[in-house]
Amino acid sequence: MLDLLRQFVSGYVVLTPEDFSLLAEKITVRSFDKRELLLRPGEVEQYMNFIVKGLARMYFYKGRSEVILNLAKEKELISSSSSFLSGAPSNYYIETLEPTTLLSITRDDLDRVYKQNSRIERLGREMTTYFVLEKEEWEHACMRLDTRERFLQFVERNPELVQRVPQKYLASYLNMKPETFSRLKHLLKKRPVAVGNR
Amino acid sequence: MSNDIGAYKDALERLHHYLSRFVPLSRQEFGQLLPYIEIREFDKRVRVIDAGSVERYLNVIATGLVRKYLPVRSKEITVQLASEGHLVHSELSFHYRIPSSAVIETIEPTVFFSISYDSLQQLYDQYPKAEHLGRLLISDLFVKKDNHYYHQLIKNTRERFLDYVRTHPQMLQRVPQKYIASYLNIKPETFSRLKHLVRPGKK
Image 1 (cartoon, helix red, strand yellow):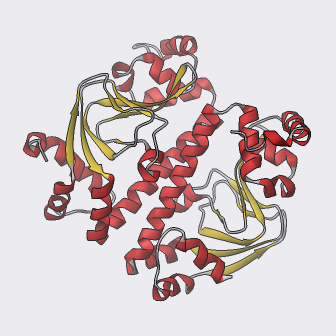
Image 2 (cartoon, chains in turn red, blue):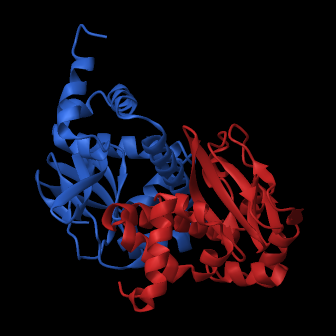
Image 3 (cartoon, chains in turn orange, red):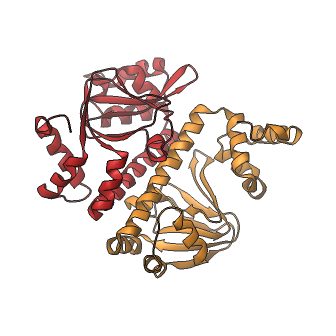
């Protein structure tokens, strides 16, 4: 399991085996059934989680409808990052969609490791930078692409999620009505050539 | 550095103060950062970075006011309004070294404290404390972005308007109305109508 994490962090910074073991010492394995809530609004996010197996989503309610902000699968992170970074209460829920195994580190432990080792602190900076850029990219996509383009881009980049995630959640994540999502999916079957044509 | 940094004593004082909110920096430590910083001056209504060019700098505003926007079809969508002490750059372009899709344009004559991409990497390599400061700055940026995004989604038009003018009273004077309206995702007509809510003497 740790090998997956080692692989993941090496995409951001080069850590020596000693550096990595500082981090690994603080990591706990947490397992959840499907449909378990990991976090509720008002709670402070204590964990940064790396998904070894499974699938989770982060969402909130706007009125009575759910708005999904994040869908994460294996080899991705899931956390209410803003709460994790600031210590302020989370605005969001986090819930597993499948049985899920996480490698988790607490805020306090991560802060301790940062103080001990500046290469790990760099890892923290690089990952946080990536969070910012991911958000920025998403916002740009929402502003620049129309519904159909957003759908096609998503399907192209996440073919696996289209299979694994209930359709209504994908629609919510892409900020479109479930009917629209169905209609676009239909279009995809008829004209597979359209995928990747962006 | 071509400009005389001494001419911006007050603004530098504010920069020192701003950075110290994240990590306490002695006068000497702050002094070590200065050789990496460039001072850049712009007239009003100048494009500091245009769509298609690569963002070289991370900027903190010493004095002035800028807006960042995305040209989308025939419209301009304002994504940031930044004044003194704020951080502004075309993030995706700066970090991924790709052409910018955003434009940053001055609204007033503006002075930036800027650090280039290369200088920033040098600084991180040289000073572990810079690494720490950088992490906290970027964390703060993320938290602010997340909050803004969440509030844009959760609040109605009237709430977005009132919250913004309460927390940024001076912006209403300094920024053309259409830019604030675009930033808050409010139609210009609606924005004009909402403005009566904050006229002096009314509640």
